[in-house]
Image (cartoon, rainbow, N blue to C red):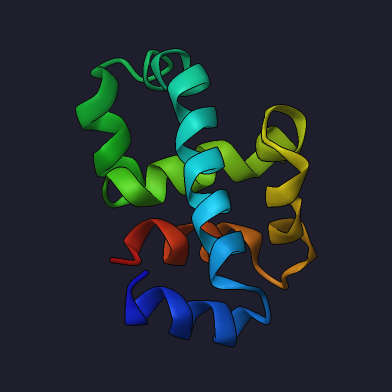
Length: 97
């Protein structure tokens, strides 16, 4: 487990394991909805990335908005919605390396 994961967990008041679970669940939900999501854009994936400012911001928005992670993700990842800015937390998790 990386030092960055430990720091992010401490910042968010969760365990490093919860960060890893949430990352896996965010990506799992994206695997389920990603194609449909990017097909909403005339120019697909590239346009989505342009609108959201990159792939990770697009994934964070798509999986957290409308409680998609809550609906499709494992309950062990639902703590993200208790944070003050769940979309930013998801982005922080996706950017964590």
